Image (cartoon, rainbow, N blue to C red):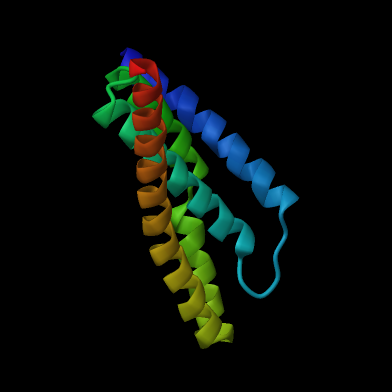
Length: 130
């Protein structure tokens, strides 16, 4: 039951953060606000993956709260799909650019989060051993 509560609370927080960022960052042409949300969420999930799975910082409930809840509530595939479709009917080139940036940028952001976390934790471990 605690797993469900962790996901629920995290999802609510993530959704509120997404709503706030969507309202704060407006965009024209390409939905930059949705792209930014999905890239930030991907970076966050890369950090969480490295922390919880590789460095064993936090429990399974921590991972559920952060990755499934907050990141899941924050990022938005459905809004990405709707924006891509809307652009496709108006500006096919922009639609392909947006979809390509979202996919490649999201994967790169996850990778960057994992690598940055690895570097920080390894550096901290080296400093502790000195």
